Amino acid sequence: MRVVVTGGELVTEQGLVPADLLLADGRIEAWLDRGAAGAAVADERVDAAGLLVFPGFIDPHVHSRDPGHTHKETFHHSTLGALCGGTTTVLEMPNAVPAVTDVATFEDRRAAHAARAWTDFGLWGMALGPANLDQVALLHASGAVAVKFFWGYALDKQTKGLVYNFAAAPPDSLLLPPENGAVLELFGEVARYGGLLAAHCEDRHVLARSAELLGHPITTYDDLLRARPAVAEATSIAVGAQFSLATGCRFHVVHMASAAGAAVVRAARAAGAAVTAETCPQYLTLTDADAARLGPAIKVYPPVRSQADQDALWAGIADGTIGSVGSDHAPHLLEEKLRGFEDAPAGGLGVETLAPLMVDAMVRGRISPARLAEVLSTGTARLYGLWPRKGSLRPGSDADLTLVDPRGSARISNERMHALNPVTTWDGWELRGRVVASLLGGEPAMRDGEPVGERRGRFVAARHGAPVG
Ligand code: NCD
Ligand code: ZN
Image (cartoon, rainbow, N blue to C red; front, side, top):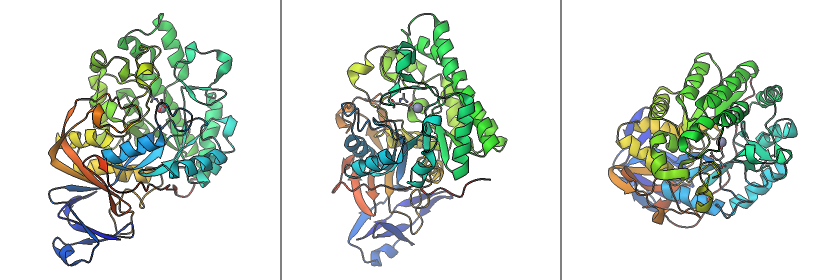
């Protein structure tokens, strides 16, 4: 199958390049001078006149709840939503039930998801600490994009599922994150095999004492922010940065939400630590002022904070402190979310709105097209060992493309969402710019928010560089 994409502007690290693309057998074959595509022999022509042609967007932070909590979401729904929103690869988080804590589960998950994927996908492994220290190198060798350590969460001993409110759970049902000595050992192990360790950063001791000091249940959003202060995030990041410096382990902070966290990452990077960070559209588009309107639907961990925090995260994207943006798609049922600020589980929809919200920010001038390509594709692919197969428009890369009309507009609505439980925080938002279409593996895969052709997502294995030290 040969496809030409004509008339668009390619978004590269150097900026915009007017060129046509020839795609063959799923790969980018060549860049053609404008007009030369007319002479190229092709089975199909995609008109990209007036459009920006991005390397296919990658969402590195997707919790599809599958298996285990398929009443909340499924891999079919999350990857369909991803595709329809303009994302061509998702990286699936390991905290379904059973969690991906060993290679056997990883292989099962890979096979099960390969049968249902609308986008290409990679898989995360989960690091528990001493309980599966012997598995993390094996997960890496199997092609896991990274291992995730849920620092600050308690897990259910039986299922290894996340416990959102561990103060309220019977203590003997919980598996707590290990103490720092064992966490340092985990960093050392991941450094040994040259992998990537990512963490949910909130210090559990700070969380536990802050909730106690609040002195009453969390009834308002302000209570929630007091019970989960930014210093909890910054403390975990600071400890992780020291462990990264001490071991050489690459350490990635997922869903960073605070100015304090960003400042720690910036300082650690300046000191030469191999520390990277991700943030998410909820932290870039919402603030605590939205809690009055949204109620507990806004509840995510770590929480959405102030306008000053949001501004600091945008500054972090601009100066390279934050190199990747993911959705943290973490669906729950509406009735679960309506339980109130104390009891509602944390998380919300995101995979289908990631690209539209970031494109809107680009059109409004908060981020350049080249930087958007970096944080939604190239930088993410490099971080997770997928580059240059993914995240690149170079000849030889997978022909995954996201086509964007910067002059268009879009509207987010629950009615158009493909999630199993289609209730989004951004319902009714009018956006500037429009994600028009995508190609996956060299063929059109989405147009105007609906799939084109058959489901054909494939598993992609990560290939990380050589171990450090
Ligand atoms: C996520 C979930 O529910 O899986 N929730 C959340 O609020 N972010 C877990 C996580 O990534 O912390
Ligand atoms: Zn998390």
